[in-house]
Image (cartoon, rainbow, N blue to C red; front, side, top):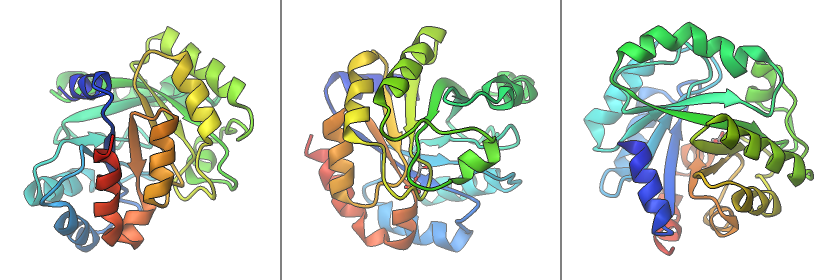
Length: 243
Ligand code: 1GP
């Protein structure tokens, strides 16, 4: 089970890396380049998802699974991005927002299909933080991110998410954010919750990733930078393994 793996790693103070494959931006040939790079030492997880609707999610997962042995976790932008080919699903509630569609609406639409599948469901409190420019998540979800310099709001939101029953909190700067979630915010949230903490958005280097880990992220998600610079993958792994 994916969640058990995350919890066990966290209890050993280990860190995890997820590589995001976004079908909005990545075609089959780009996936091949990336998987070629990662094949010998895969990341802990591959997350698959994006902001738009994609019929090809299942194909992307098939392709990934043909190329390498790695758990694939859905990170969906909407109810259409479900596939039973995935190993797990982050069932995201956008708890920083006040749009019922992303708090419960899309969940209801996909509930029957998810329930009858064998995909592991991980209920996730998804918290969008301002990363210096409007991002696709912000635009598509029609929600306001939490201001970058308001860790207290992020903390209260994360605590509420845990109390509601989410099993993971995800601090999201948004893909391509100008700057990632601050270390201060990550560490304040880390100290306030007892469940795993995922951080992503705008992390562009091994140093950025190390800062996020040191501040308390258990699992870091990297997207854009590996699409443009797959050669830094080994550096990212080295940072993960240094903990
Ligand atoms: C996952 O949205 C991120 O949380 C991915 O962001 O593409 O900026 O790495 P980047």
